[in-house]
Amino acid sequence: MFEDVMCVKVQYDSPLMKDDYMLSRDELMEFLEYDPSTGIFRWRRSPSKNKAAGLLAGHKNGQGYREIEFRGKSYQAHRLAYIFIYGEWPSGEVDHINGTRDDNRIANLRNATKSQNQHNRKSWSRKTSSTYKGVTFHKATGKWAASIQVNKKRKHLGIFENQELAHVAYRDAALELHGVFARTE
Image (cartoon, rainbow, N blue to C red):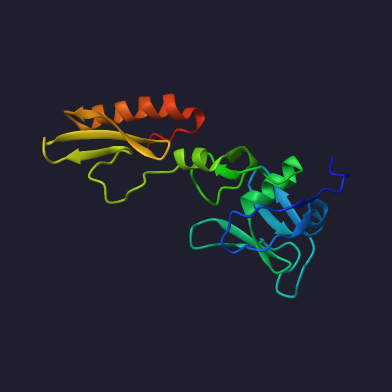
């Protein structure tokens, strides 16, 4: 299945990786094992003294993504999972379908544009007055407002008596505008 040697120029989505580097899938497979059902990477072969074969590869970074250091570079594990399974680097970003940044099971990963990946984000504000994404309290009316972002612009969906009704409006708009990438929680 993985007999062809594929060498590609990596496009990085990590601020830690600034230089282009030619990295082959065979080179990764020589040093790493990946279990697509768990999303876990282990060292197949030790690349250095402090990384023994069989040990869990990588660490969680400050943003909650799993990173694996290899040959002096840091790689996000979800991007490595993508090349292990599909044989090529993703053309865009890799979206975690369930929103859990360190869940690198292949069933939870999909190629996405930056915009699609943003649609699947959890609520953009932790300081909102509502428990629902896209819903805020409208002080002037004492009611609940729903809004959604479309093409980098906020679209007002209406004012509602309660946050549940506002959430329904947001959910319907998100499903219509963002399809399978809509996150309504």
